[in-house]
Image 1 (cartoon, one colour):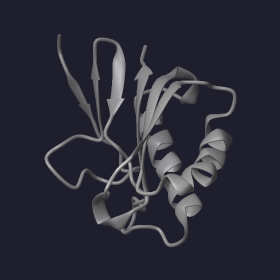
Image 2 (image 1 turned 90 degrees about the vertical axis):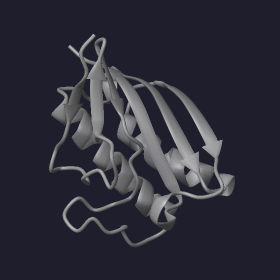
Image 3 (image 1 turned 60 degrees about the horizontal axis):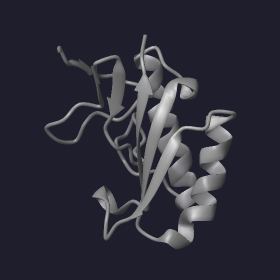
Length: 127
């Protein structure tokens, strides 16, 4: 099975030895996206809702680069520094995914890169 590595300028560059996404076996696997502006590679200003907005835009750009949309997403994982942020994150998430209903896990973590409050990754069917 071959693995294809994807990169788009419409989402932040990987800040380590990884890819924004890989395609293998008919599926797209994204790296976790945090609230980095792809133009400045700086964390966006604002609360967890503003951070989630940017995360969802970054994921949408990675999905589009693979020829996918939220309709093809089969699984997401949300990482939160504080589960008290769940309702705000869920509201922004719901707005972006529309009628799609991928399986989802939400995990509380001790910390995230660059001090952000939320990180999201996803798996989507391609082709």
